[in-house]
Length: 499
Ligand code: NAD
Image 1 (cartoon, rainbow, N blue to C red):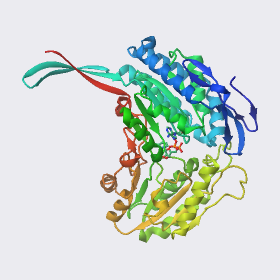
Image 2: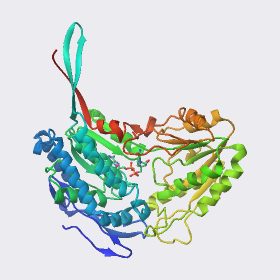
Image 3: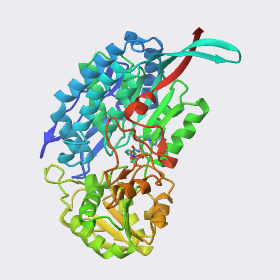
Image 4: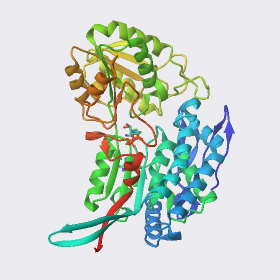
């Protein structure tokens, strides 16, 4: 099987079909493939190898072998690892126009977003971590200690965890494929990346670049996909896998934790969210709400940290809704190849049906539809959803509690600051949030009472390579980015030597 490059239409491009197993780009056992659908046209854009249990087994065996044999001194030689990841980053830069077209084709992401989170940011990430790893102190002398009458000198050594399975979703796939693989590689692990089957190509392209343009030893970085989640689940139960790093829904996160429990795997879980934006009574609505409404529509609302629940003081409802309605009706969405659009289609027909169903349920449970709510008449092809604004949403209703992952903003009135905080915290999630006020100190005081991993107080929710990111409660375990994010891929070993 060869990599394909069939181009058509407005730059549509089929991506790499092959898996990367043990240093070789290969089809799946028996030549199985599955179709990749372009969500903007509903057409088959190409295929990807449909990994079978035997393929996943080979990948796990190769990773185990490569890690245990310290292939190429991978575990011990940070300079070698940094050089290899820099080669990977240089390969991404060389392939970036090809990747841009692949990403727009398989996600339906607006091309504008490839200049941000979908492509530019992942390349920045891949360039950032090698320098970080070179400077990281993997071994530290930690002074003299006494315990139970004994005295010893202590060394702290940060060692790789071992074989790491990295399982990622489809909404920002290249960014998450890099976010989960690159720090884990630089920490000295062997990584098996399993991208989502709705967007397999950018992950398989990463495998192709690793195989063709880097010195990463065979088995140290592998990429496998399967259309069957039961096959993917083998990565989460196999005793030869030491760690699972996962980004995806809370429902699948629970399954992975259960599958990983018998072998007590280390896990990092970046899961779903239901983030709230509390707009306090002294906030400048004209300044705050256009951005709040537009952010939630960006990328079809398919972002985990988007603050999709807006809480407004009851007396400000009419004014606030008018501002948000105007923003959402003017929001540029449609053809993802149009650089003026900030939203394309939903990822799939199933996802669109789920979102439309949530909207319908909200109206049935008493919410008012202010704008949107359906399929746009002017976009008959593609899984598009109108930017949708709902008011008077019961925070305990299904749409008030479940992750929507569509271009939908719900607005709920509140009567006191305490009530707003209680509504924001009354969810199983705890990923992100936002507070807006005319007073920075007041915004910060309220933000401190929101039970989430990240929160913006008169600022957007924090997002940068040096800002720890992650959820509390059922939004996850562990952190990505910052020092904490790197250390997730290491175990801390304490060694005593004579004082
Ligand atoms: P998903 O949970 O359905 O799938 C995620 C990945 O898990 C896919 O690769 C899928 O094939 C795989 N998978 C499914 N079942 C599995 C199993 N039993 N064992 C092993 N792997 C399995 O999520 P999705 O629909 O692809 O993505 C959307 C979700 O991702 C949303 O809930 C969103 O909030 C979340 N997300 C979270 C963050 C974060 O940083 N917290 C970032 C982006 C997306």
